Image 1: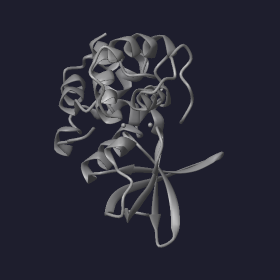
Image 2: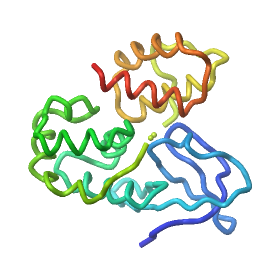
Image 3: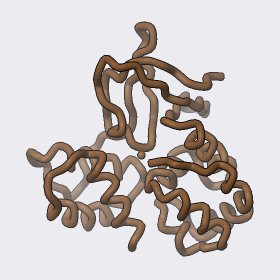
Image 4: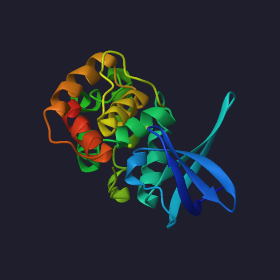
Length: 202
């Protein structure tokens, strides 16, 4: 099993990056591909291979603590790899830990794909197990989000596509889209971080 890969980032998409290692391009699904940059610099990505009947995927993380948190989350019944990434994408991992420890179902159900039953299962399975991870993390497939406007602001378009890849509903994304357009033009990474903060406030 792979522990990590070291190579060059050759392409970035809302759901994944392409890491070239010794002439082979690996498609690596990550929480926030825009944390990376296409250049000649070598980067290390911690990876976890997830094999399903219909797919074999590599999930990547900048830090080992991120990978360990991901592994804990996918052990919970009702949380798959995509849901785990969506939960981790908001960056407030201390808030996640506190919500689990405090049995805060309301907070946990703010994540896409997490209903009351799954939130209760998270508390049951993870309580007392996440503190040791001390996670310090930050997200995501490329589709045009229904109801949004494609314009020259490609960074915003990519951020909205990343939200859709995380599992947020079009209705939620459209509300965030309006708020983000009022901000000064910035990077995809920053748009995504701001969007996730807005969504968690709802």
